[in-house]
Image (cartoon, rainbow, N blue to C red):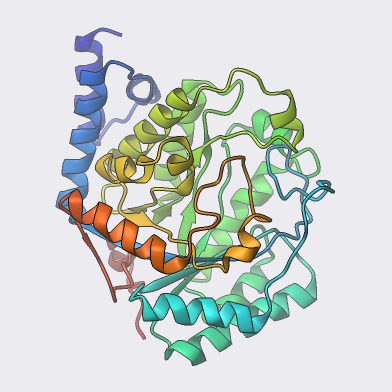
Length: 368
């Protein structure tokens, strides 16, 4: 693309009024180093203005890899018979929460495979209550446990959850159906975002970036979806194949540099569209480049989720190949991230829950 076309697209998106899909596609497709730098610098300036140069840590606990869904891209899909299945005990979950609290992480993320059985609903509710008891109610808790009924979301909210991340993976209905052959109803998943908002969660969503056959125009629509849904937080990452999945098994021509570039450009465009949202720099970026998460921060992200799950379980929770940090214990992760973030000229918001400013404006600031 010409420099003039890029600059015009960046100016229009930066103005934030009449956002056009074609302008977003232009920015997402930036490959020239000077254009990428201009995009990331513009997004970083918005980040500093709206959320500051503070990175919030969310201690990540991977609860288990049992899943009722058979998504064609996911390493813990229901029909993967190769992986060893596990579920953390309540004591192990509480131990991880205590560790995050001791490290000064003001927030916790509980993530796991999608389940809808009553025993699982009860288990999560009890885990939430025990975490609050063990940490004095000082941690903000995010759940990322997939589609549920409104009643289940309500119960977990009452048990102590504050935030919920429900990734759509794509907003293109046909592509969604290809990725989720066992559950093709995109609108049913989107409706869950309404339920979460009605139950007064901080609402988050996200997509996969650079899926096989995915166009820049489709990714631009993903960005417009974030804006239309007026979400508080975004968790998204580049598609990375997993060899034990139908999509990964047949996928050829994986380009890590392209995926990283697209992932960073998506972060930057998201920051321009949602200036006061929380945006995660995900582990998938680090899988593509050892400094990928730090690059995500410089492109506009302000959240990182250090893993506090016991290392003996991490190899069984790989959604994609090459997941980093499988043998790195929680203290090592904390020390490394702290040093790298400080080197960027940013600080870690220890002891802070790190609510997204847009959620605070809704009157949803989390209180102990």
